[in-house]
Image (cartoon, rainbow, N blue to C red):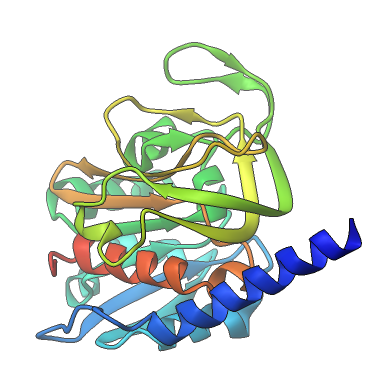
Length: 254
């Protein structure tokens, strides 16, 4: 048994080394520098490793905004100077004015949005947020937008699972193999809108089957990626490619 586990670990490490060598192969060369805001707050994370991932993206310049001040971005005309917003917060407080601002910048102005991992659980009392990102994670038992009763959603740490590409022709999955391995946190018991376009799936029993999807919210392109809990995800070249592609796509760069 120990030998089998050892060989599995060696094989996984070898695959990670191979992916690292090839992670930039075929990466899109941007004609301009994309400017993005990364929203954090409400959930601890491995900051150095997380931002090292964004530093590895050629042609993407990022700035961090922490909650609760981060939500002020939705009230500022300065947002016109940015191509996309990346959500990596876990936050519940938002004013009515900030809600209106978020809807305006996304639905009307078409500002790109990439939502990562635990940001799916933001704004539990604001139904429109679930429409924006295409799904709802339940921090407590509640009704889904379709009226179905749900228990609290589940999360499971350090799961080694296989991610499969559901649409290999979508710009967000460009450069990904048909499937890849990752060690990450999984979610189960979430509710998904029917009109999202599934990009990645899994058949692991500790996870919901959908892993990432793309959608439109008015004029905005939106991508949600369930992956991204810690350094085993941040350092995975295929996760990096996925995030980079998503930023480019919502910014109308691929």
